[in-house]
Image 1 (cartoon, helix red, strand yellow):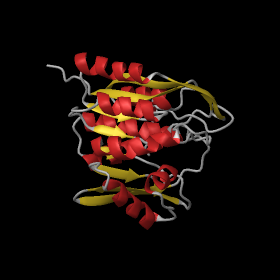
Image 2 (spheres, helix red, strand yellow):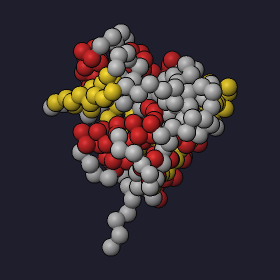
Image 3 (spheres, one colour):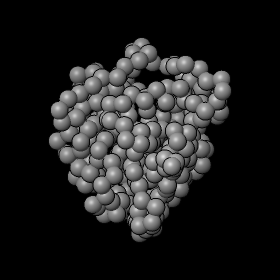
Image 4 (tube, helix red, strand yellow):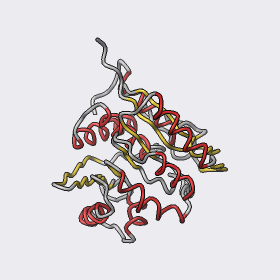
Length: 270
């Protein structure tokens, strides 16, 4: 009897350059052996240098995409990325009420280029409706600073911020350190009964487009496959690191990753 792949519903915006958003989500889930399902929240015209245009999908259609998947195929994990505005955020929260599968929330607010991807009025929905539903929240430092209304300058600040976010009700928070400084990059994972720190040598590269989307989707896939939280985060970080090291070098700005690096015969040990 064959083992069915983990069904991962990705709720996010579309990236025309293929490096982030829904495209990164589907590539990641597929590369890790999962079955990717989708609910697109926005269409973006973007490349490695920036976002040129955004058109949000209607909240009703976002809701119906989610319900259509849940009512038929079902899910083992859910990854939430770009939401765009409060109406879409509310529609997503409504559609996911009562869902038992782990929800991984990547609170996408700003693109790698610096372009805004979330309207200010949606932050309240993130804090009070979606964070309490999440198995894991994966903000970077700029996103954490907005959600916690505090400045983050070091590892202790990351830990304090994670604990503040835990007060909103998620089961775990991973505050990523990619926007920090220094030779070492550290992510801090906090949950109700403990914490863990994941550190590694910082990779000096401009090819980091979609790293947040990729990490969250990898965590969702591993959790959907039944791994424990710390193993899911550890393996997701390894996957992202390999994808960065294998980046094809496309574009003149923040280039995309190699999401398929694990499935190549000549993969390098990272």
